[in-house]
Figure 1 (tube, rainbow, N blue to C red):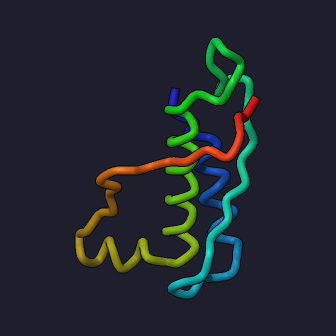
Figure 2 (figure 1 turned 90 degrees about the vertical axis):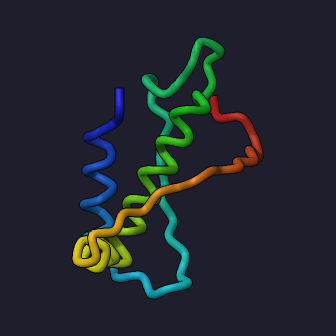
Length: 90
């Protein structure tokens, strides 16, 4: 199930945060919930990409790009991703 409530919370936090200028770094802190783990008791790879997607949406909100994108009828898509994990999330 897609974490709709978590996405809402991240976007609300991004709207209250100060606006990001181009080139600034957006940091999204997330927590591994019991629904995020797989049968090996680790964070599921698909869920980790979903959590990163939540951070992407919050970053777009915090930079206020949504208004420009809506005006132009554009959307943001990720064509591919390459993830390197530093350690396991248990």
